Amino acid sequence: MLPVRPWADRARLAVFFSRLAVKEHLRPGLHVKPLAAELFLTDNCNLKCVSCACWRTVTRKELDGAEWRDVIDQLAALGIVKANFTGGEPLLRRDAPELMAYAYSRGIRNLHVNTNAVLLDERRRTAVLDAGVRSFNISVDGPDAEIHERVRGVDGSFDKTIGRLTELVEERARLKLRVRMNFTVMRSNIESLPDMMRLAQRLKVQLYLNLATDRTFLFRAGQVTLETRIGTEQINAVLAEVEQLLRADGRFLPHFSELSYLRRHFDDVLQQDLPCAESQLKLMIHSTGEVGGCWAHDAHDNVRDKPIAEIIDSRRYRDDHDRFFAKDCKGCGSNYALNLAWRPSSHLDNLLWHAGLRSLAAS
Image (tube, rainbow, N blue to C red; front, side, top):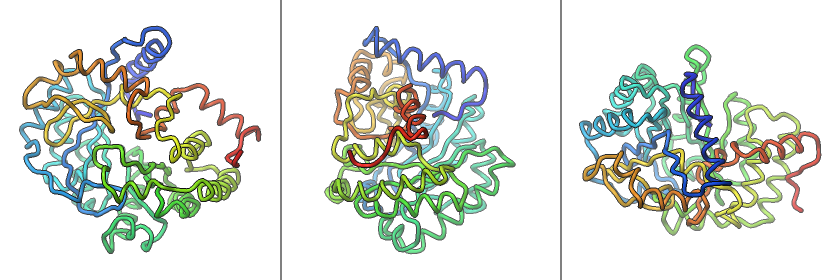
């Protein structure tokens, strides 16, 4: 969910999800405008993850600082309440902290960064925090250096990432930070999931599970496809141990509903019974200026050619996002936790699991 703070933002978020309910049950064509922007500052990266394709080529002609500031001006005028700075690795851009600070100065006060943290040394951490960022997702793909670096492709990256994650956690209380450790579940590391849960509890940081997919625009590669091929028996064995850990101590761990979604993801990436709130909430702004689309469907327009307001009010954008919400799409599983969180049935399933009336055990 969005880490909103001002009451005005909370009210707008409540209205947003109320309108989604109307869209689902009464008015499928209702235009629900985005409240958050996903800003891909660069598609390039300093690691070589087997679950990703962005490092396999170099993306050029990306938006420069002036163009990004114009984008931020337009987002502020549209009433966007949250900006997610992501990539690739967003901290590869030297002006990343400046762009974050600019967004804050324009009234977008909920700022979030997705990063592998390798570049988040003391100087950059200070700059990012001074810019107003208070929310971080740090990518960790194994509980130790051997597994993490086998997935991430760069020796020495584990110690850097864990060290800088720990430094953020140490600042958490003082600055009221929201820090999550993101673990991408894939064939190469699924058996490490129980140990990742133990690591999250040792570090006292919330564990979030990304699910490997080859459908999204940065992950389309043959090697990624191989990482999505996880057998049912392997998933069942891992989730049996996961459930024991979750029942013993659920602090900092995913909910039952999220783990149940994981079980289905690798056989049914679409999961069409769950409408896609993610596609409605977030406006995608790509590093080379493309606007719109979603994680699995490419954008049709570019901010270098049209104002953002014109794009999101266009018939094509509205029709696309009507389809995405109804899961008339390729499917990807991106931010499935948001799609679960606004459904009352997810919260009921979690309560029933706590009561012993639901289980992760194979049926």
